[in-house]
Length: 256
Image (cartoon, rainbow, N blue to C red):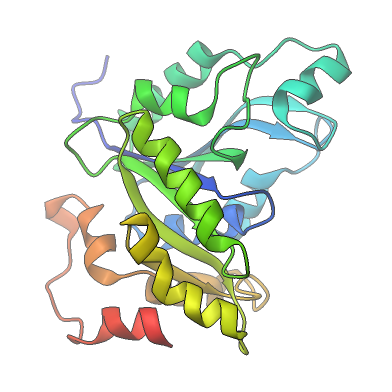
């Protein structure tokens, strides 16, 4: 066992599928700190040998360690995909061991779930079950929730945050996964109301098409998509930059 201090672990979930979880994970990996690992406990909808979500994370974020634990070919919830393929269910103990291994050698380990927070990763285990084993209480560890800004976002976000808290885990923040250049009325209102109804701050806002300009531009801009103080809280003290951000940057993140 390594004597290195265990790094922080952040689980990344979504209020549903296709809310921008993978791009948000890549953005956080690019923005956070040098020693970052990304674990995908279960990948579905990808055949053996084909690139999955972790390949996209690595393409966008650059030099990050990646680890995938289980893979199933059909684009379904992991437990359903395992049954249809006649393959063994994902084993939670294997996932927990892999996350713990990464956390002993990296400052930050991101764990990207599949779909929403209650989706079954194995026969019955969810991301919350894994989180209960790997997220250290009383630290910056927690569950980051990626949300869609449109109509329905408030209900989905509140249900997700309530489920996280019910397991005794810390909601680490909300990230809007895709903010359009011309948001509609519901989106503009939701951006104000999400923190109010969930009690969790919006700590990141990714523009729609964030990955389109290419990896170099993605890495340059990624730190600007997150609240700087929140991002700083994930970093070990030794690598935190000197406080030099303008006082209104957090407000700019929430309002622009």
